[in-house]
Every structure is written in C-alpha cells, then in structure tokens.
Length: 60
Image 1 (cartoon, helix red, strand yellow):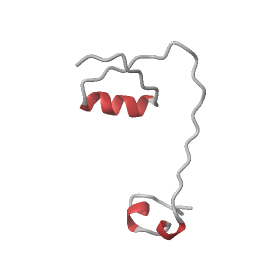
Image 2: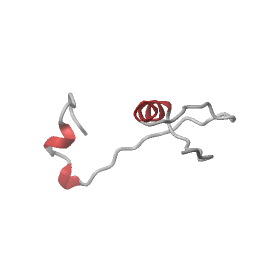
Image 3: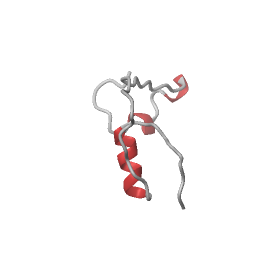
Image 4: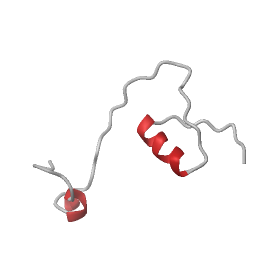
C-alpha cells in the first residue's frame, strides 16, 4: 500500500514504529520547535503498582 500521509512526531517514536511496520522516517522540511511532554493521571491511580513499576525515587 502506498500513501501520501505525513505524520509528525518525535524521532524516538517514529524510529520505534518504523522498525515494526513498513514505514520510513524522513526529516521535516522546516525547523521544528522543542516539544514539551506532560504526564497526567487521576489522583486515585497515583500510588498504583502499574504506574510506579520501574520508577526510582519519588514518583510525584
């Protein structure tokens, strides 16, 4: 299948999925701004084992 679809994301995300699928990672033709990431979750899940698994130190 061929497509003209363009998806802009981080290089790490793109590289990971390009290995799993028949995808190509190409540079974007314009300068990119720095991306900020936020991790949000409901307070009832704050101390959940799935959330803190593998996290060292205080998870706050």
